[in-house]
Image (tube, rainbow over all chains, first blue to last red; front, side, top):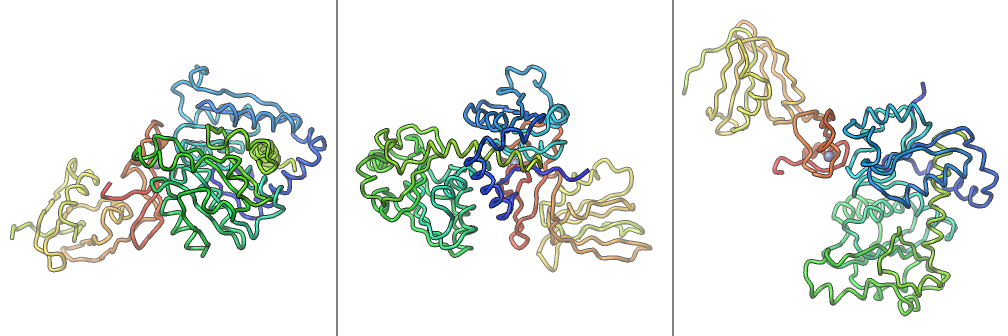
Length: 307
Length: 142
Ligand SMILES: [Zn+2]
């Protein structure tokens, strides 16, 4: 039996494999009807130990659009058969019903542990605050589609850069391309962790600046990646009051930005992008949602080796 | 110095950092041994000032890699006919299994019953390990 390939950590896939997935994802997005039979007769199992409706529906629609079918559960409480069962037992059982698994779990490392026992390819659909590789793939496909490539870009990350796993893995992914610089916009308390600076930014000699206010350098950006900042993340009220408005992207800040800026956000948003920005052609976050589905279609068909 | 008989055939674990002797004694389950064993604590040492030491009058299988994880400066002497026949220097093992537990409360190891706690060496110089599942960094200090 050949070794089953899983996607647990964004680092599991090489640059070549990422490029292949991006290419395939774009191809699918251009001619979706050409792919609506490639997973005929295949079943995706969605093992969602915590509810995440968006991610689950994205995986489900991806599989259905490929001609496959879906079974699964979306919270452990509703699936009494799974109660108290170990992950290896669940994965071995479901793995004999389905051809591929997407797993979301509140505990970090659960999909990795599961992958050791899974007889079929397993995709990490998010494990706690740890990894979310299909989000990274989604971000990359969207950037590639809109910007036509990954080189010579200035990318701004804005908001909670300390706890945002999507930010960390996109910085990692983008640091592999040429002439990329980063502008990291966050309150002092929510800066990018030091290991990202030493192990990724400094190690690869990448240019980066850290600033507190979005309006200070928004005019430099080709891509603006917004994330949520919650009030409770601030250590003191005064800082929150001083900075709260500078993390809300609105029309006036968009006026300072380049004409070909793209705005991304992993969604759901709370109030960090005001609704008036949605009409701006530079707002790409809903398009990003759609590319998330194409990214998952590409990934499923590659892992099932039907493409 | 406290006099402890030299052993005829067995193992001497020497140069143990003061305070680690008991930990190793327990780890090797020597408290349950039915042969002669000695745990010597705070013995004088030329190298370190003070050290712990374990003498085992038996040939048992010792997990050398795990001893290396507890302290790579430990030396293990194999004794035959009252003479050291082999001196083993330890090094940090590349993986550590079921000795320490991951301290990340969000880690899968905190809720799965039969999971093996496993750490991978990521920096040999600084002796840094990370949890194989959640990437949480392990440090002795906690
Ligand atoms: Zn862990």
